[in-house]
Image (cartoon, rainbow over all chains, first blue to last red; front, side):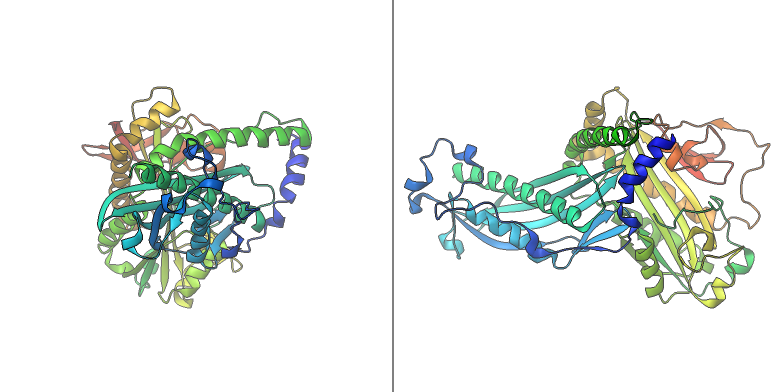
Length: 204
Length: 301
């Protein structure tokens, strides 16, 4: 390696945190809510409903009635969120982290969340099956996989997975980077889940 | 990374001494596996070498594009294998096979995804056994998606005064899980191919077809082939560090990504020749001059 490149990499990875090995803990409350600037319903996936009228005139009774029967982290080691270089990444409460992200579905103005199976057009069992960050070379990548089981009238009729990813440079191998990347992957997975739910609603 | 290969590199293979075999009262088995899913190996960009900070930033940007493409390419395979657990496959093989090594007294088995020295140090400290066998696993596809590699790094760590007294040579008191402290260590590689098309997406599609059938079969085969090799190797005679220098050699395939051999330097990964120890209906067992071992799956999945 040339001296100039070595110097450059030294600068960059000097930043790599003086090689701290302190574990990283992801705060369950760190999942940002999607922008929500008015009382009007927010459409997470506007394209999925492009044929529908604007949210201002949506009839509540026409909204797709959803019941979230179960939201769980089913991974063998629930708080494990992978590794940055030499640093284990954990969630202090992965179930809460996951639930907070799933709560953002309630910002989809086309869904109406209900409390009983009888009131629901679709009953969902939502599981977190993968959530991790991995580093290769100078890059970090996060993956979050959600499995959803759909029921209608007491009968399960479909299972889908939704995957969210985030990739980017691993600048300082830091806590905020890990948390941000995992949160983006989680919200991307929830966004895909939302699109999947919308598709099921349209098919009802 | 674990069993940290920093300062001076200890030998790849260290057989268990005769003295140690009568000393183990109990052994816990820990499988550190940093990944939750398969990944594609991405060679580090080096085109910016010689251009200082700007060159390094260019390389980061190249790495970024390559990683993003690799992650996109491997996603269909990951989705096809969401319900498959290599952790379970490997743990199950180890549980079944290590019972054959009576003097090891293998007891508790566990998987951890924290492969930092701190994390493994904690696992060692938490164990009440006289020794802990770490079997660190990694599984991935080559950058072109044609080859599946599974790597096991085994290291038997002492965990009480009696077993620590058996550490050969200078010990590392600062990092209890340092490889130099191992009473046994070796590296094992499994290599399997699909019929290469020269196109990563097509190669990965072969691994992914039929709900990831080929990848599942390859990973399960890796566990089934490598664990018996480990079990045999841990019982190898004290002086049997490597094959005789004059033993007949057969050629070994090496990764097309040369850079890989800079960061994972065992002969089983990058050696050009090896001794053919045995072969079965699926492939060959190769032993290298540093004592490392490889199972080469012949034919394609």
